[in-house]
Length: 308
Image (cartoon, rainbow, N blue to C red; front, top):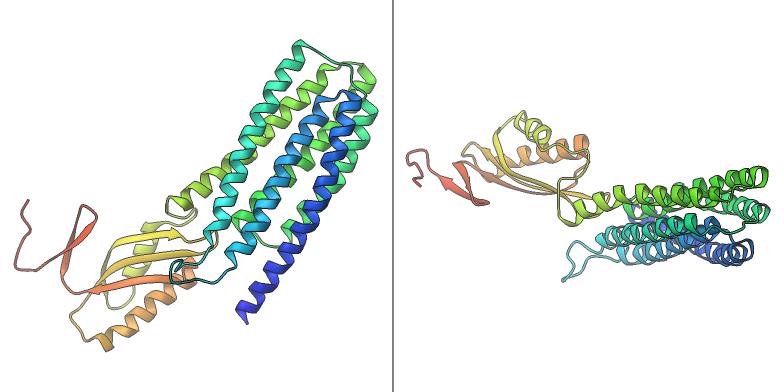
């Protein structure tokens, strides 16, 4: 039942992404044509921004298909990190686009060009409707890192195209064409801001860092209060995908039979699932004191000390 629900989620997400790809391509063509005819750098910047959106949506669409593939003998965790990798590539491409926009905006300040504000305004109005609709559809599908990166692309476009409408009105009323370059600076800054968070989070997952919002100290404290647990150490938590976390640890218990330790293991897993949403665990029980040396766990008996 759960797998069937996931399949429906993936199919719905893929359908939204396909529609978004077609609409985005059409809007990019409109932006390029209108930007050239109106001499508006802001519109051409938006075309570059939307081109990065198209690539983001394309990568996201491919990643949704790839990460839904089941685990295999060579990919034992499946392909969940395909979406995380796509999110990182999307965000990195946005940084490049942002610097190109900022460079061109600075150049335009020294070499201003006449701008047709009315064309800017009606093209940007189309963009607000299109990007807003795509962002809303993405928000209603899934909230993993891959989809969220595409959503941030579209949300940023909605805000930047709304700013172009305001800028077009200002140019129409004041005849100050430098506003076009100022808008481009704002769009470039917005692109940079929206990309850094995704880069940081996707890198943390790819480097197997502790997931955002999870405290190893709180996990250790929660496990230690479980009846039968003496201590917990060598604790690691990482993300397989943006929504799937895994945990491994060593837990010291009394010297009891394996059948008697089953209730402790069940209690630990229930605690991790209920309090921390961690369902994939690898837990090793021990009854001797251990010390950590160079990342390895060395059993130390109660009657011997380990000398360095």
